[in-house]
Length: 298
Ligand SMILES: *[C@@H]1O[C@H](CO)[C@@H](O)[C@H](O)[C@H]1NC(C)=O
Ligand SMILES: *[C@@H]1O[C@H](CO)[C@@H](O)[C@H](O)[C@H]1NC(C)=O
Ligand SMILES: *[C@@H]1O[C@H](CO)[C@@H](O)[C@H](O)[C@H]1NC(C)=O
Image (cartoon, rainbow, N blue to C red; front, side, top):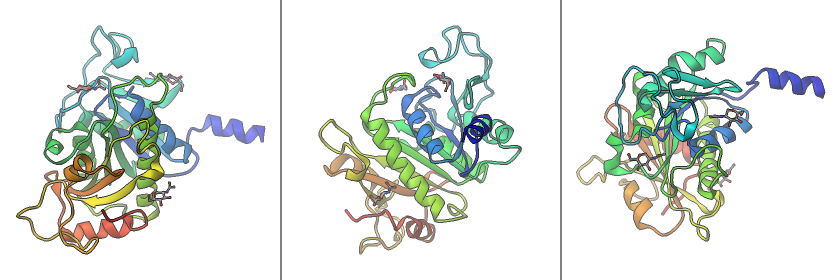
């Protein structure tokens, strides 16, 4: 027993799939770290490559990383004047990039991940869970979505963007807030369902935009309180019909479900990684079939 424990400690990864993770709130945000821990505990080979600072709202911006300024990384997670990219020396799966979310995930996909995976590439990209929703008109500005779309569109890696409505920025070394644990559990459920559905995990040039509704101290306090609903990113008023779902060919709008419904809902929209809008019905159907085991109707 002891020798296998030591072997496990020496080799960070033993099974599961290779997952690159990023976000826009910063590498030291507890919400992303909580999901990182859940994925790792499930046996996945996760590498976090995320901005050194909060980069909320920076969409698809991309720029060469620069030396960290005198204030250091967010929450004093690295000293002032640190290099443009850096790793946690006691856990090299945790990495910052002092630039935008897209730059961070690109660095993880091109360099950091393959270095830790014996040259192999990421099989799946996840971003977030973001602190705050990313629904409808917010999609083009979200760095969480920007990074997922870079992975899906430019790097050709299936990608899922996660965001949660409740919460405030919290450092990685603080107690895990209730909503961060609930959102990590929900994100793990979606990720596991997609992995279990087999490869290709998603159609090409598709990303998922997943949003989790409110968590309070008395309502929606655990993952099992939530229902997963298939939705659209934009309202679809003048769009071609959606895939068949719950007796309709018009999927609900993610913003309505997250903001106007009082039940505990998590929305999953099938996004077109070419332009961050809703994917066509044919690609929606492929994804909804994969998600069938967890989807409910409103
Ligand atoms: C670095 O990793 C160690 C070991 O997991 C952890 O205790 C520490 O809080 C981490 N620091 C940052 C900034 O990630
Ligand atoms: C990041 O900045 C945005 C606005 O620029 C703010 O709303 C958000 O709370 C900040 N998040 C973190 C993790 O500091
Ligand atoms: C995932 O979510 C579905 C639908 O809510 C639920 O039935 C299932 O038990 C969840 N799976 C896990 C592992 O939590």
